[in-house]
Image (cartoon, rainbow, N blue to C red; front, side, top):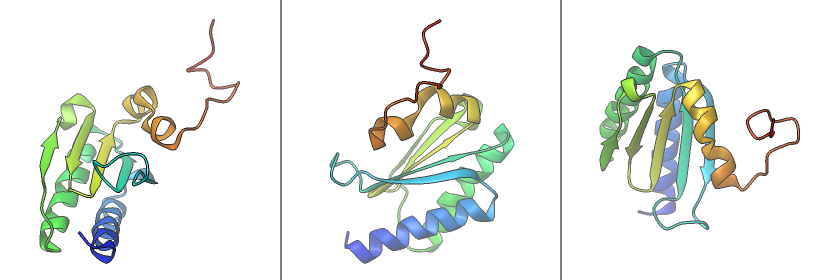
Length: 122
């Protein structure tokens, strides 16, 4: 897929998430770290119903824009849903699961801060 199409796909997903009031939307450029995708978009829902609405709305909007959904993994009941749109992967989480899996740190290479309770040994 050409760069302009990838950017259009990314923008479509982000706008779709914003329309449904997704929380803490983060876009990570992973193009130089892996060949599975160019971008990962991570967002949170406020409830299982909201999480379901986020991923359903994103899939519908992406299809309307002329792109395909490659695959979907997980369900709102599992607190984490992944949708593979090819060059862009969407991870939609409930907040506790998002904090637990911490994909932002994994893919952006950040180290935990000293006051991050999740990593402090006690």
